[in-house]
Image 1: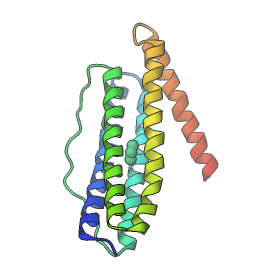
Image 2: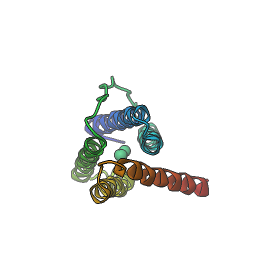
Image 3: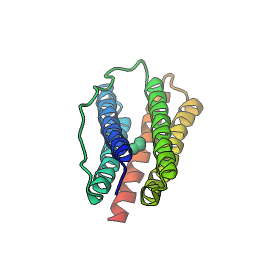
Length: 173
Ligand code: FEO
């Protein structure tokens, strides 16, 4: 049995995960528009992963007998000054999500809600991986540079990351 506050906060997280998915799908579309096919594929995949994060929360709420609520979605930004700016925004967004997960963990802990505390551990580990992933892309961008052919090589690197992700997913199924 979840507290009303926990139900509200888990529902807020559901909405944040859907927003993350919309954000990455929009960014994917921007990359495709700029002929950055590797980044477009990678971000489209990531949008799917965000929906999987949302579904995990949805299932948990349903299992506890609570009502999951799909709220109205804020529209994501549609234009970016550069690929670097876009990935910086993603990294900042993931840090915000980590903060929200940490707030949820804190709430579950103060309420001695051990089931929710355990459920949230997956998200704690996932956010660590997500921050690491996007930080590593930004580090590669700094290393390669975005001038001239740099952008082409960055797109190719990100395309490789998307292909590896597909292989990992296929191997798991
Ligand atoms: Fe659901 Fe990218 O965090």
